[in-house]
Image 1: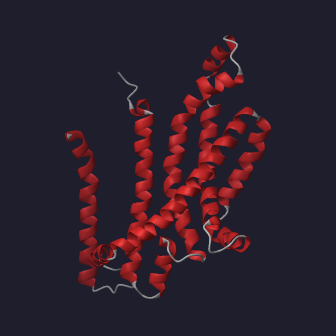
Image 2 (image 1 turned 90 degrees about the vertical axis):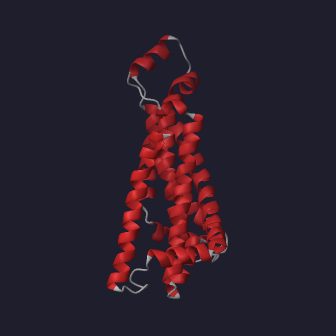
Length: 256
């Protein structure tokens, strides 16, 4: 218990100092909300419209979750194929890097024109593309980078490629997979959030931030930003908890 408290109190203290300094800066300098709203204004707006914040976060979160699931699935399937067939690896890796380099703001309007702008499809596709790259790259690395001595042992036992994959490669790739998810989960929220800026239903966090800022409701816009941060943290923490629950051995020390 003491160890957990020692790990928690430093970031809490730093956050408290930062918020106090922020509040004092706004008050002393008499900064207007359109320049920098005070934390007290953001907090009061957030708590005053908590139901609205939750509904917007839920809509964006479900969009991000669908993209995370689809992107992870596609990344895993292609990583398995890339590990098995070198030509697939040589073809997919440059394509994945190219997709990762495409800006969201450039791709979203194109997908909005291709699909029904009132549906989730364009935003889910954007999130899927963003999630796919870290999952594919990390899992492929985990499947391929096994110790040569372990591969030699599997060959000496006349193990089939399927057996080698199940017994050796997949367990080796599990830490890489969760590392990818820790990166991809918050990115999924960011991708869904940015994609919502470019039209569609006005129920997500991205569209509500843009609408509040356009109506000079800067305290509310920042409150939606806080809701976005909380949503991203929830995604990340869920991945961490799933990792600890399913693979507790990854967190154990290897030293004596």
